[in-house]
Image 1 (spheres, rainbow, N blue to C red):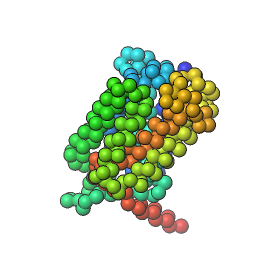
Image 2: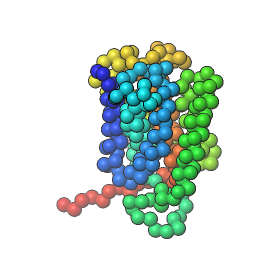
Image 3: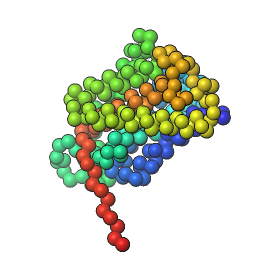
Length: 249
């Protein structure tokens, strides 16, 4: 297949699409996490071709450093990695502090202020700076990215210790879903990991069910960070979600 990365990106959109339809209470969280993730598309120039060599639509990675596939992939990854914990454990975002004014159901109080976006932007900039520093120190880009995400999330946990368990569970769930999507991808495009991914620097030849451990590590780091980051930036916590009322017969 010519455009393997496009197929992978479309596969990664599927879980978020299901969550979007099934859990309207998580849509604001998904939108904001997806938007915050988009700046990371610019880091593709650091992954390509050092880490992998997919073909991009319109050869955009060679022209501008990233492609449409990067945007789709980040939207999909952020959607399920930020909500995996809430979906599996039936939790919903609620404000940490009582709202000053009544919020409409479509616009949660924790997401309307401009201040959270300043907080979110600061964390995104911090992660990019940490990854750049690690890369400059000689750490391969994938590990630099995962270490930067994990370090920033760990720092946020100092202020939000209540998110420790959700973040760890979110990391494991995201890694499991990431692995499952990669297995589907490998079944649809046999030999794609051997053909398109370069040998790992720190985990050479190591794979789980044929999927490079590097990729699973990335899913683990994404789930850890995406569970902590929006809750800290937008000042919400996870509470038990109300079950839908049974329909009248």
